[in-house]
Length: 431
Ligand code: ASP
Image (cartoon, rainbow, N blue to C red; front, side):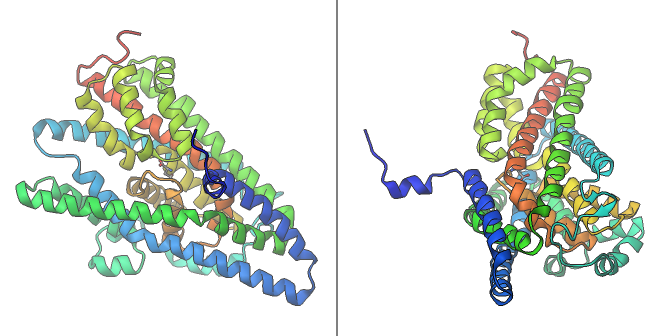
Protein backbone atom coordinates (compact mmCIF):
# COMPACT_ATOMS: atom_id res chain seq x y z
CA UNK A 1 0.00 0.00 0.00
CA UNK A 2 1.15 3.48 -0.73
CA UNK A 3 1.86 5.38 2.45
CA UNK A 4 1.36 9.10 2.31
CA UNK A 5 4.11 11.36 3.36
CA UNK A 6 3.22 13.10 6.62
CA UNK A 7 3.70 16.47 4.89
CA UNK A 8 1.05 15.55 2.31
CA UNK A 9 -1.33 14.63 5.08
CA UNK A 10 -1.32 18.20 6.37
CA UNK A 11 -2.04 19.55 2.92
CA UNK A 12 -5.02 17.27 2.56
CA UNK A 13 -7.06 18.58 5.47
CA UNK A 14 -10.26 19.72 3.72
CA UNK A 15 -10.61 23.47 3.41
CA UNK A 16 -13.70 23.63 5.58
CA UNK A 17 -11.83 21.96 8.43
CA UNK A 18 -8.92 24.33 7.95
CA UNK A 19 -11.31 27.26 8.16
CA UNK A 20 -13.00 25.84 11.23
CA UNK A 21 -9.64 25.39 12.93
CA UNK A 22 -8.67 28.93 11.89
CA UNK A 23 -11.90 30.18 13.40
CA UNK A 24 -11.23 28.48 16.74
CA UNK A 25 -7.64 29.71 16.79
CA UNK A 26 -8.88 33.19 15.98
CA UNK A 27 -11.24 33.13 18.96
CA UNK A 28 -8.41 32.02 21.22
CA UNK A 29 -5.97 34.57 19.82
CA UNK A 30 -8.54 37.35 20.09
CA UNK A 31 -9.12 36.57 23.76
CA UNK A 32 -5.37 36.49 24.43
CA UNK A 33 -4.79 39.78 22.56
CA UNK A 34 -7.39 41.41 24.80
CA UNK A 35 -5.19 40.65 27.79
CA UNK A 36 -2.08 42.24 26.27
CA UNK A 37 -0.83 45.66 27.40
CA UNK A 38 -2.19 48.56 25.31
CA UNK A 39 0.83 49.08 23.01
CA UNK A 40 1.26 45.41 22.12
CA UNK A 41 -2.49 45.06 21.70
CA UNK A 42 -2.72 47.93 19.21
CA UNK A 43 0.24 46.58 17.25
CA UNK A 44 -1.19 43.07 17.02
CA UNK A 45 -4.59 44.38 16.00
CA UNK A 46 -3.17 46.51 13.20
CA UNK A 47 -1.13 43.56 11.98
CA UNK A 48 -4.24 41.36 11.91
CA UNK A 49 -6.09 44.12 10.12
CA UNK A 50 -3.35 44.35 7.51
CA UNK A 51 -3.45 40.61 6.79
CA UNK A 52 -7.24 40.60 6.58
CA UNK A 53 -7.20 43.57 4.24
CA UNK A 54 -4.82 41.87 1.82
CA UNK A 55 -7.18 38.91 1.66
CA UNK A 56 -10.22 41.09 0.99
CA UNK A 57 -8.34 43.05 -1.68
CA UNK A 58 -7.30 39.83 -3.38
CA UNK A 59 -10.97 38.88 -3.59
CA UNK A 60 -11.83 42.25 -5.10
CA UNK A 61 -9.05 41.85 -7.64
CA UNK A 62 -10.87 38.85 -9.10
CA UNK A 63 -14.21 40.52 -9.61
CA UNK A 64 -14.02 42.01 -13.09
CA UNK A 65 -12.28 39.23 -15.02
CA UNK A 66 -14.10 36.45 -13.17
CA UNK A 67 -17.57 37.85 -13.72
CA UNK A 68 -17.00 38.85 -17.33
CA UNK A 69 -15.44 35.56 -18.42
CA UNK A 70 -17.94 33.48 -16.50
CA UNK A 71 -20.96 35.20 -18.03
CA UNK A 72 -19.61 35.27 -21.56
CA UNK A 73 -18.64 31.63 -21.30
CA UNK A 74 -21.99 30.54 -19.88
CA UNK A 75 -24.23 32.55 -22.19
CA UNK A 76 -22.30 31.87 -25.39
CA UNK A 77 -22.65 28.16 -24.63
CA UNK A 78 -26.38 28.37 -25.37
CA UNK A 79 -25.69 27.82 -29.08
CA UNK A 80 -27.92 28.99 -31.92
CA UNK A 81 -30.59 27.54 -34.18
CA UNK A 82 -34.36 27.42 -33.79
CA UNK A 83 -34.67 24.45 -31.42
CA UNK A 84 -31.87 25.69 -29.27
CA UNK A 85 -33.52 29.11 -29.24
CA UNK A 86 -36.79 27.71 -27.89
CA UNK A 87 -35.09 25.50 -25.36
CA UNK A 88 -32.79 28.37 -24.44
CA UNK A 89 -35.72 30.68 -23.81
CA UNK A 90 -37.48 28.13 -21.59
CA UNK A 91 -34.29 27.41 -19.70
CA UNK A 92 -33.40 31.05 -19.14
CA UNK A 93 -36.97 31.83 -18.06
CA UNK A 94 -36.82 29.01 -15.53
CA UNK A 95 -33.49 30.31 -14.21
CA UNK A 96 -34.70 33.87 -13.86
CA UNK A 97 -38.04 32.97 -12.25
CA UNK A 98 -36.61 30.56 -9.67
CA UNK A 99 -33.73 32.87 -8.82
CA UNK A 100 -36.19 35.70 -8.27
CA UNK A 101 -38.29 33.46 -6.01
CA UNK A 102 -35.15 32.62 -4.07
CA UNK A 103 -34.26 36.29 -3.65
CA UNK A 104 -37.74 37.08 -2.43
CA UNK A 105 -37.58 34.20 0.08
CA UNK A 106 -34.20 35.53 1.25
CA UNK A 107 -35.34 39.12 1.61
CA UNK A 108 -38.57 38.17 3.38
CA UNK A 109 -36.73 35.96 5.86
CA UNK A 110 -34.02 38.51 6.62
CA UNK A 111 -36.62 41.25 7.12
CA UNK A 112 -38.60 38.94 9.39
CA UNK A 113 -35.75 37.65 11.55
CA UNK A 114 -33.57 40.79 11.41
CA UNK A 115 -30.34 38.97 12.35
CA UNK A 116 -28.47 42.31 12.18
CA UNK A 117 -30.51 43.71 15.06
CA UNK A 118 -30.35 42.50 18.63
CA UNK A 119 -32.60 43.85 21.42
CA UNK A 120 -33.69 46.63 19.10
CA UNK A 121 -30.08 47.75 18.54
CA UNK A 122 -27.97 47.30 15.39
CA UNK A 123 -25.24 44.74 16.02
CA UNK A 124 -22.54 46.71 14.17
CA UNK A 125 -20.59 47.65 17.31
CA UNK A 126 -21.01 44.17 18.76
CA UNK A 127 -19.45 42.54 15.71
CA UNK A 128 -16.73 45.15 15.48
CA UNK A 129 -17.76 47.13 12.41
CA UNK A 130 -15.79 50.34 12.55
CA UNK A 131 -17.83 52.83 10.51
CA UNK A 132 -20.69 54.59 12.22
CA UNK A 133 -24.27 54.69 10.99
CA UNK A 134 -23.87 58.35 10.02
CA UNK A 135 -20.75 57.72 7.96
CA UNK A 136 -22.43 54.88 6.11
CA UNK A 137 -25.64 56.85 5.69
CA UNK A 138 -23.73 59.61 3.95
CA UNK A 139 -22.31 57.09 1.47
CA UNK A 140 -25.70 55.51 0.90
CA UNK A 141 -27.53 58.81 0.67
CA UNK A 142 -26.71 59.32 -2.96
CA UNK A 143 -27.60 55.76 -3.82
CA UNK A 144 -30.98 55.65 -2.19
CA UNK A 145 -32.01 58.92 -3.71
CA UNK A 146 -31.52 57.45 -7.15
CA UNK A 147 -34.74 56.87 -8.94
CA UNK A 148 -35.65 53.46 -10.25
CA UNK A 149 -34.98 54.85 -13.71
CA UNK A 150 -31.36 55.41 -12.77
CA UNK A 151 -30.85 51.73 -12.07
CA UNK A 152 -31.87 50.99 -15.65
CA UNK A 153 -29.67 53.80 -16.90
CA UNK A 154 -26.72 52.29 -15.06
CA UNK A 155 -27.36 49.02 -16.89
CA UNK A 156 -26.13 50.69 -20.07
CA UNK A 157 -22.67 52.09 -19.37
CA UNK A 158 -21.30 54.72 -21.70
CA UNK A 159 -17.84 53.28 -21.34
CA UNK A 160 -17.27 49.70 -20.23
CA UNK A 161 -13.64 50.30 -19.30
CA UNK A 162 -14.56 53.03 -16.86
CA UNK A 163 -17.50 50.95 -15.63
CA UNK A 164 -15.03 48.16 -14.80
CA UNK A 165 -12.57 50.57 -13.21
CA UNK A 166 -15.23 52.21 -11.06
CA UNK A 167 -16.86 48.98 -9.98
CA UNK A 168 -20.12 49.72 -11.82
CA UNK A 169 -20.87 46.07 -12.14
CA UNK A 170 -24.44 46.31 -13.32
CA UNK A 171 -23.37 47.78 -16.65
CA UNK A 172 -20.52 45.35 -17.01
CA UNK A 173 -22.75 42.36 -16.36
CA UNK A 174 -25.31 43.51 -18.92
CA UNK A 175 -22.56 44.11 -21.46
CA UNK A 176 -21.14 40.63 -20.85
CA UNK A 177 -24.60 39.06 -21.25
CA UNK A 178 -25.05 40.85 -24.58
CA UNK A 179 -21.54 39.94 -25.70
CA UNK A 180 -22.22 36.26 -24.92
CA UNK A 181 -25.53 36.40 -26.76
CA UNK A 182 -23.92 38.03 -29.80
CA UNK A 183 -21.30 35.30 -29.81
CA UNK A 184 -24.01 32.70 -30.38
CA UNK A 185 -24.52 34.34 -33.80
CA UNK A 186 -20.91 33.81 -34.83
CA UNK A 187 -19.87 30.97 -37.08
CA UNK A 188 -16.81 28.91 -37.98
CA UNK A 189 -13.39 30.26 -37.25
CA UNK A 190 -14.53 33.36 -35.39
CA UNK A 191 -16.65 31.37 -33.00
CA UNK A 192 -13.86 28.90 -32.34
CA UNK A 193 -11.30 31.58 -31.59
CA UNK A 194 -13.53 33.60 -29.31
CA UNK A 195 -15.02 30.73 -27.35
CA UNK A 196 -11.57 29.20 -26.97
CA UNK A 197 -10.28 32.51 -25.65
CA UNK A 198 -13.07 33.14 -23.14
CA UNK A 199 -13.06 29.56 -22.02
CA UNK A 200 -9.36 29.83 -21.29
CA UNK A 201 -9.73 33.13 -19.41
CA UNK A 202 -12.54 31.64 -17.35
CA UNK A 203 -10.45 28.60 -16.56
CA UNK A 204 -7.51 30.74 -15.44
CA UNK A 205 -9.79 32.85 -13.25
CA UNK A 206 -11.22 29.74 -11.59
CA UNK A 207 -7.68 28.64 -10.84
CA UNK A 208 -6.77 32.03 -9.43
CA UNK A 209 -9.84 31.96 -7.21
CA UNK A 210 -8.82 28.52 -5.98
CA UNK A 211 -5.36 29.83 -5.18
CA UNK A 212 -6.70 32.76 -3.24
CA UNK A 213 -9.05 30.48 -1.35
CA UNK A 214 -6.03 28.52 -0.16
CA UNK A 215 -5.36 31.56 1.99
CA UNK A 216 -8.93 31.72 3.27
CA UNK A 217 -8.01 30.14 6.62
CA UNK A 218 -5.37 32.85 7.15
CA UNK A 219 -7.83 35.54 6.04
CA UNK A 220 -10.52 34.17 8.35
CA UNK A 221 -8.06 33.92 11.20
CA UNK A 222 -6.87 37.53 10.84
CA UNK A 223 -10.31 39.05 10.32
CA UNK A 224 -12.04 37.18 13.13
CA UNK A 225 -9.14 37.47 15.61
CA UNK A 226 -9.16 41.22 15.05
CA UNK A 227 -12.87 41.46 15.79
CA UNK A 228 -12.68 39.28 18.90
CA UNK A 229 -9.66 41.29 20.11
CA UNK A 230 -11.65 44.48 19.69
CA UNK A 231 -15.06 43.38 20.90
CA UNK A 232 -14.79 40.10 22.82
CA UNK A 233 -16.92 37.04 22.18
CA UNK A 234 -20.14 39.05 21.95
CA UNK A 235 -19.47 39.16 18.21
CA UNK A 236 -20.52 35.56 17.78
CA UNK A 237 -24.19 35.78 18.67
CA UNK A 238 -25.29 37.85 15.66
CA UNK A 239 -23.33 35.51 13.40
CA UNK A 240 -25.35 32.57 14.72
CA UNK A 241 -28.56 34.45 13.98
CA UNK A 242 -27.30 35.07 10.46
CA UNK A 243 -26.43 31.40 10.08
CA UNK A 244 -29.88 30.38 11.22
CA UNK A 245 -31.61 32.92 8.96
CA UNK A 246 -29.76 31.69 5.87
CA UNK A 247 -30.37 28.02 6.67
CA UNK A 248 -34.06 28.67 7.28
CA UNK A 249 -34.46 30.52 3.97
CA UNK A 250 -32.51 27.87 2.04
CA UNK A 251 -34.76 25.25 3.65
CA UNK A 252 -37.91 27.07 2.47
CA UNK A 253 -36.60 27.20 -1.09
CA UNK A 254 -35.41 23.59 -1.07
CA UNK A 255 -38.36 21.98 0.72
CA UNK A 256 -41.26 24.23 -0.29
CA UNK A 257 -40.73 26.41 -3.38
CA UNK A 258 -38.90 23.98 -5.67
CA UNK A 259 -41.06 20.93 -4.81
CA UNK A 260 -44.18 23.00 -5.55
CA UNK A 261 -42.78 23.81 -8.99
CA UNK A 262 -41.85 20.16 -9.53
CA UNK A 263 -45.34 19.00 -8.65
CA UNK A 264 -47.46 21.70 -10.22
CA UNK A 265 -45.48 22.69 -13.27
CA UNK A 266 -43.67 19.44 -13.98
CA UNK A 267 -46.15 16.90 -12.58
CA UNK A 268 -43.24 15.11 -10.89
CA UNK A 269 -43.35 13.63 -7.40
CA UNK A 270 -40.82 15.64 -5.38
CA UNK A 271 -39.87 12.59 -3.30
CA UNK A 272 -38.78 10.71 -6.45
CA UNK A 273 -36.65 13.64 -7.45
CA UNK A 274 -34.99 14.04 -4.03
CA UNK A 275 -34.15 10.33 -4.07
CA UNK A 276 -32.96 10.39 -7.66
CA UNK A 277 -30.71 13.38 -7.17
CA UNK A 278 -29.29 12.39 -3.77
CA UNK A 279 -25.76 11.58 -5.04
CA UNK A 280 -25.51 14.94 -6.83
CA UNK A 281 -26.83 16.80 -3.80
CA UNK A 282 -24.35 15.13 -1.48
CA UNK A 283 -21.49 15.84 -3.86
CA UNK A 284 -22.55 19.47 -4.14
CA UNK A 285 -22.71 19.65 -0.35
CA UNK A 286 -19.25 18.23 0.15
CA UNK A 287 -17.46 20.04 -2.68
CA UNK A 288 -19.23 23.44 -2.44
CA UNK A 289 -18.94 23.63 -6.19
CA UNK A 290 -21.70 23.28 -8.77
CA UNK A 291 -19.08 23.01 -11.51
CA UNK A 292 -17.23 20.18 -9.81
CA UNK A 293 -20.56 18.38 -9.29
CA UNK A 294 -21.54 18.76 -12.95
CA UNK A 295 -20.63 15.24 -14.16
CA UNK A 296 -22.51 13.61 -11.28
CA UNK A 297 -25.53 15.86 -11.79
CA UNK A 298 -25.71 14.82 -15.44
CA UNK A 299 -25.24 11.17 -14.59
CA UNK A 300 -28.04 11.28 -12.00
CA UNK A 301 -30.43 12.95 -14.44
CA UNK A 302 -29.74 10.49 -17.23
CA UNK A 303 -29.42 7.25 -15.28
CA UNK A 304 -31.73 7.82 -12.34
CA UNK A 305 -34.34 10.22 -13.74
CA UNK A 306 -34.21 8.83 -17.29
CA UNK A 307 -33.76 12.18 -19.01
CA UNK A 308 -32.22 12.33 -22.48
CA UNK A 309 -28.62 13.34 -22.95
CA UNK A 310 -29.77 16.13 -25.24
CA UNK A 311 -31.75 17.70 -22.43
CA UNK A 312 -29.16 17.29 -19.68
CA UNK A 313 -26.24 18.45 -21.78
CA UNK A 314 -28.15 21.59 -22.66
CA UNK A 315 -29.70 22.55 -19.34
CA UNK A 316 -27.10 21.43 -16.81
CA UNK A 317 -23.74 22.91 -17.91
CA UNK A 318 -25.43 26.27 -18.45
CA UNK A 319 -27.29 25.96 -15.15
CA UNK A 320 -24.12 25.20 -13.21
CA UNK A 321 -22.83 28.69 -13.89
CA UNK A 322 -25.97 30.68 -14.61
CA UNK A 323 -28.65 29.31 -12.29
CA UNK A 324 -27.80 29.80 -8.62
CA UNK A 325 -30.86 30.13 -6.43
CA UNK A 326 -29.06 29.44 -3.18
CA UNK A 327 -26.37 31.94 -4.04
CA UNK A 328 -28.82 34.74 -4.89
CA UNK A 329 -30.75 34.05 -1.69
CA UNK A 330 -27.56 34.14 0.36
CA UNK A 331 -26.26 37.33 -1.24
CA UNK A 332 -29.45 39.24 -0.56
CA UNK A 333 -29.58 38.08 3.08
CA UNK A 334 -25.95 39.04 3.73
CA UNK A 335 -26.33 42.47 2.11
CA UNK A 336 -29.40 43.16 4.25
CA UNK A 337 -27.72 41.79 7.37
CA UNK A 338 -24.81 44.16 6.94
CA UNK A 339 -27.16 47.10 6.37
CA UNK A 340 -29.10 46.15 9.51
CA UNK A 341 -25.88 45.84 11.46
CA UNK A 342 -25.04 49.45 10.60
CA UNK A 343 -28.51 50.49 11.69
CA UNK A 344 -29.57 51.41 8.20
CA UNK A 345 -33.02 50.92 6.73
CA UNK A 346 -32.58 50.24 3.04
CA UNK A 347 -35.20 52.06 1.01
CA UNK A 348 -37.31 50.30 -1.56
CA UNK A 349 -35.10 51.47 -4.44
CA UNK A 350 -31.99 50.15 -2.76
CA UNK A 351 -33.69 46.84 -1.94
CA UNK A 352 -34.67 46.62 -5.59
CA UNK A 353 -31.00 47.17 -6.53
CA UNK A 354 -30.07 44.35 -4.15
CA UNK A 355 -32.59 42.01 -5.82
CA UNK A 356 -31.41 42.93 -9.29
CA UNK A 357 -27.75 42.60 -8.41
CA UNK A 358 -28.31 39.32 -6.56
CA UNK A 359 -30.01 38.02 -9.68
CA UNK A 360 -27.35 39.27 -12.06
CA UNK A 361 -24.33 38.39 -9.95
CA UNK A 362 -25.70 34.92 -9.24
CA UNK A 363 -25.71 34.53 -13.01
CA UNK A 364 -22.22 35.96 -13.09
CA UNK A 365 -20.45 34.05 -10.34
CA UNK A 366 -18.69 30.81 -11.15
CA UNK A 367 -19.82 27.50 -9.67
CA UNK A 368 -16.83 27.26 -7.37
CA UNK A 369 -16.42 27.45 -3.59
CA UNK A 370 -16.95 30.87 -2.01
CA UNK A 371 -17.73 32.56 -5.31
CA UNK A 372 -20.57 34.43 -3.58
CA UNK A 373 -18.11 36.44 -1.53
CA UNK A 374 -17.01 38.24 -4.67
CA UNK A 375 -20.64 38.95 -5.54
CA UNK A 376 -21.42 40.24 -2.06
CA UNK A 377 -18.56 42.72 -2.35
CA UNK A 378 -20.10 43.93 -5.62
CA UNK A 379 -23.55 44.37 -4.06
CA UNK A 380 -22.22 46.19 -1.00
CA UNK A 381 -20.21 48.57 -3.16
CA UNK A 382 -23.15 49.17 -5.48
CA UNK A 383 -25.48 50.22 -2.66
CA UNK A 384 -22.75 52.13 -0.83
CA UNK A 385 -22.19 49.84 2.18
CA UNK A 386 -18.63 49.31 3.46
CA UNK A 387 -17.20 45.91 2.62
CA UNK A 388 -15.58 45.34 6.03
CA UNK A 389 -18.59 43.24 7.06
CA UNK A 390 -17.67 40.55 4.54
CA UNK A 391 -14.71 39.60 6.72
CA UNK A 392 -17.00 38.41 9.48
CA UNK A 393 -19.36 36.52 7.25
CA UNK A 394 -16.33 34.69 5.91
CA UNK A 395 -16.05 32.77 9.18
CA UNK A 396 -19.38 31.05 8.64
CA UNK A 397 -19.31 31.12 4.85
CA UNK A 398 -18.02 27.63 4.26
CA UNK A 399 -20.84 25.78 5.98
CA UNK A 400 -23.39 27.97 4.24
CA UNK A 401 -21.55 27.46 0.94
CA UNK A 402 -22.06 23.71 1.25
CA UNK A 403 -25.78 24.17 1.81
CA UNK A 404 -26.38 26.81 -0.85
CA UNK A 405 -24.43 24.82 -3.44
CA UNK A 406 -26.75 21.85 -2.84
CA UNK A 407 -29.71 24.19 -3.39
CA UNK A 408 -28.08 25.57 -6.56
CA UNK A 409 -27.62 22.08 -7.98
CA UNK A 410 -31.09 20.95 -6.92
CA UNK A 411 -32.65 23.87 -8.75
CA UNK A 412 -30.68 23.01 -11.92
CA UNK A 413 -31.97 19.47 -11.80
CA UNK A 414 -35.56 20.61 -11.17
CA UNK A 415 -35.21 22.84 -14.23
CA UNK A 416 -33.96 19.93 -16.33
CA UNK A 417 -36.85 17.60 -15.47
CA UNK A 418 -39.52 20.30 -15.66
CA UNK A 419 -38.30 21.54 -19.04
CA UNK A 420 -37.83 17.92 -20.12
CA UNK A 421 -41.52 17.30 -19.37
CA UNK A 422 -42.52 20.23 -21.60
CA UNK A 423 -40.39 18.71 -24.40
CA UNK A 424 -42.29 15.41 -24.28
CA UNK A 425 -39.80 13.57 -22.11
CA UNK A 426 -40.95 11.31 -19.29
CA UNK A 427 -38.66 11.58 -16.28
CA UNK A 428 -39.15 8.91 -13.60
CA UNK A 429 -41.45 6.95 -15.91
CA UNK A 430 -39.93 3.71 -14.59
CA UNK A 431 -40.09 4.56 -10.91
N1 ASP B 1 -20.21 27.56 -4.26
C1 ASP B 1 -21.36 27.96 -5.01
C2 ASP B 1 -21.57 27.01 -6.18
O1 ASP B 1 -20.64 26.43 -6.68
C3 ASP B 1 -21.25 29.36 -5.50
C4 ASP B 1 -21.32 30.30 -4.32
O2 ASP B 1 -22.44 30.68 -3.94
O3 ASP B 1 -20.28 30.63 -3.75
O4 ASP B 1 -22.68 26.80 -6.62
